[in-house]
Amino acid sequence: MENLGVDPKLLIAQIINFGLFFFIFSTFIAKPFLAFIQSEKKKDAERVRLNDLAANQEADLTKKEGEMKLRLKKEYDKALVEAKNEAVAVRTTLMKEATSEAEAYLAKAKKEMADEKRNMEREIKERIGALSVVLVERGLREYLTDDMQKGVTKRILTNLETQNLN
Image (cartoon, rainbow, N blue to C red; front, side, top):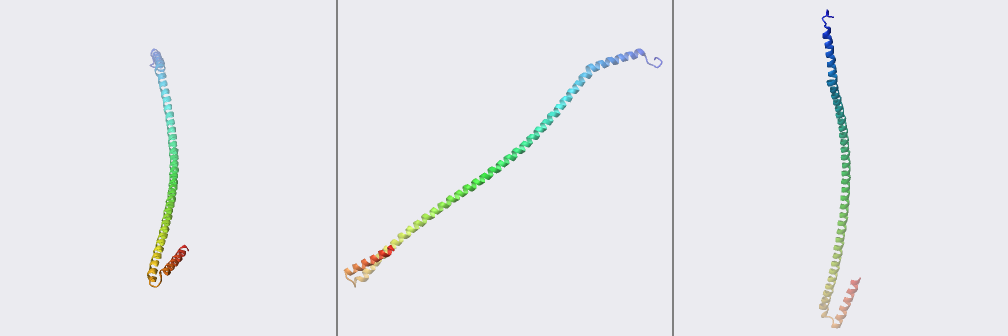
């Protein structure tokens, strides 16, 4: 082999060196390096899993938020409709109360007007009666005696009272 330029002692030394290098490399460098790479792969897989979990939770939260907003909007709309209905009911009640108060006021005013009218009619009749008596006395004083005047006056007053009752 020397003819080929290969020294067997050098070849054996290189094989032993390679064997030692391989043993040292595989024991002290390759195994810890592979363990480190595997742990990094596990960490990456865990990060990916946690990212997916976070994304799923975020999607769930977004979905729940949307549902919550929709439910709040429905409740808000429902409360708004109820408030409008209550406002209409209150308005209707107030209108009825105002109408009944106005009707009561009108009835009271009509009654007062009727009473006032009766009082005025009574007063006018009394004045007319008194005026009639005065006119008759003055007109008939010259032509009738006192007894005749009293009789005529009495008859006029009786006729007036019967007319007033009718």
